[in-house]
Length: 141
Image (cartoon, rainbow, N blue to C red; front, side, top):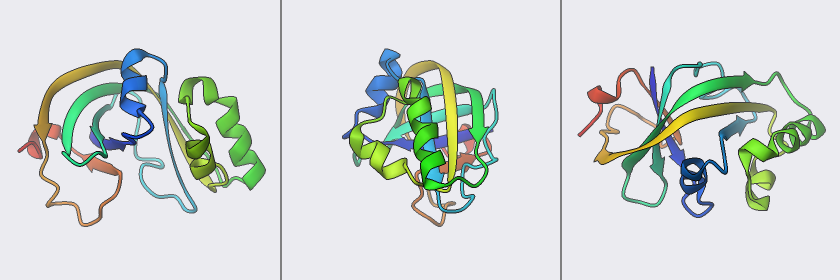
């Protein structure tokens, strides 16, 4: 399974992944929404920065995934701080994700740049930051 993942351009998430400064990404919500339970080791993440051009620029392989059970505010904060060396979150990102009831921590490896390409989002109704794509070739423009 391939996944298209939007990263925060202003927080330089993609640069941190490419340099090795960061090896884990986080997603969270009040409920169990994507990618909770839907991403697995060995799958490929295709990264797009949320800076407007919408081009896929890099890819990585999922090494490990942690899907939390329902967390208290304190448990959520602690989980983030316990993984901060791999997450490399800014204070704004800690504030954004801390306190979410459900967190997904995704460790990645083999981050590689790819020749930039666009994707067809017409099959996706929402403007989410995580798009499951059975095969990236099917949504390449």
